[in-house]
Amino acid sequence: MHTDIAEILFDEAQLECIVNSLAERINKDYSGKTLEIIGILKGSVVFLADLIRKLEIDCTLDFITASSYGAKTVSSGKVRLDANMLPDLKNKHILLVEDILDTGSTLAGIKNIVYGKGAFSAAVCTLFNKPSRRKKPIKAEYVGTDIPDKFVVGYGLDYNDRYRNLPYVGVLKPEIYTGINKIKE
Ligand code: XMP
Ligand code: MG
Image (cartoon, rainbow, N blue to C red; front, side, top):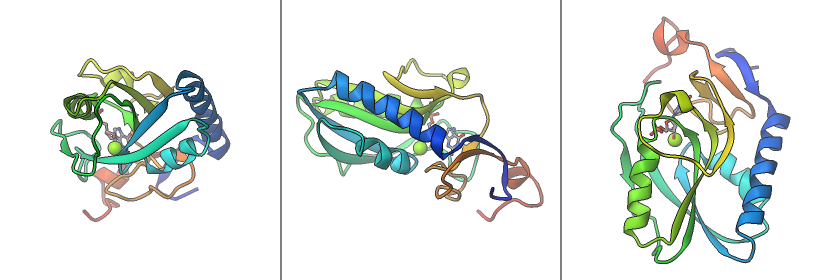
């Protein structure tokens, strides 16, 4: 285990189980339809790469960039969104794929953009959900699992862009972002 990690919450096998059950539901719900998948960069990338390989439906893949954290573990509340890479979404079924649904600000902003581009439907698939921190009335149709209000990294999730490569999801030691061992910003 990485020395900056206090505890592992989900190992590779547990993550695979979560992804499999999400994919099974998506395959069933969108059977016979074309699904436009939109990954929210960068945190969703590892999860998304595993998820789409389990999908048997007809689908396309695009990305939107969102950032609200910077080198912090608490959201600034201000989300920067860059939707320049999105194609025309008129009358399409959209699945927004996110790493963590936290306050809901990111997904609230993205849903506005997607419906503004004429989407027929926009469902949310999130690997993790922190229900205790919600500020916007956003619900995810597909939730991998709820987690407590701890700052987690790995499997695409970062602190200051580090730790995305860890194959498991773990809780970051608080001294990494508060104390003498703080990593360079
Ligand atoms: P909101 O508040 O807009 O935030 O729902 C969602 C985004 O916040 C990030 N986030 C985390 N990132 N570990 C992370 O690495 C966490 O524990 C965590 N909690 C929230 C994440 O980028 C998500 O897209
Ligand atoms: Mg993110």
